[in-house]
Image (tube, rainbow, N blue to C red):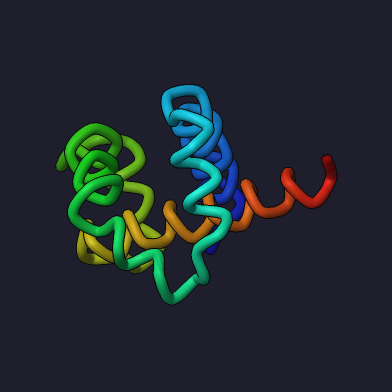
Length: 92
């Protein structure tokens, strides 16, 4: 993953953290990486519909980095969100 995509994902995580209620953030932190698939049809759909419009900057950046499917793109974002939320909880 290139540095530009990493920075964009960091920006997206900030957006998600602002919009997401604390109890949902807690659920994500408490889930294992393997359990993130449970949010595929909820958070994943929101990410795909609102943050990854076809032809959008983030969508095109993912394509440039070799991600061909929105499902894979949203999975990368959800995994990064899980990691960031988990890191923040440990720092508290």
